[in-house]
Length: 135
Image 1 (cartoon, one colour):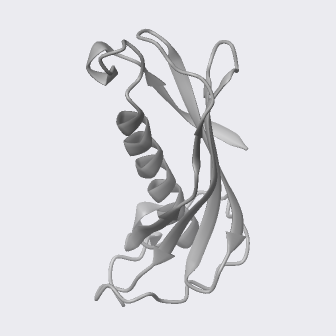
Image 2 (cartoon, rainbow, N blue to C red; image 1 turned 120 degrees about the vertical axis):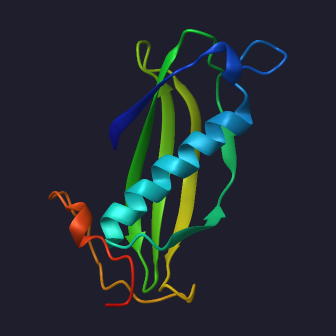
């Protein structure tokens, strides 16, 4: 699993208990995962379909630097399935894990559309190569 995104936990990210608000962390994960899906499927029309059980293992505090790891585990006909781990950048202690996040590839009308992908793409995909319409 690659950990590319890092976040610095700031006061506005905290819940009343003084730890990272779970909803904020889930928003960061959803954003990171959809970006990953868009790049892998080379299509900007991708939506979140499903997120499995979310396992909060430990918490993050103000000032912590956390990192988000995303890994593709399956390519369906119109979907991509990933798993996620969030950990403390310094201690490497796991904060959260999600076994399954599913994103669906759509056409510009919002209809699930086959993407033709079967494996992870590591090569750079330029923004001009990401499909924004049916042409």
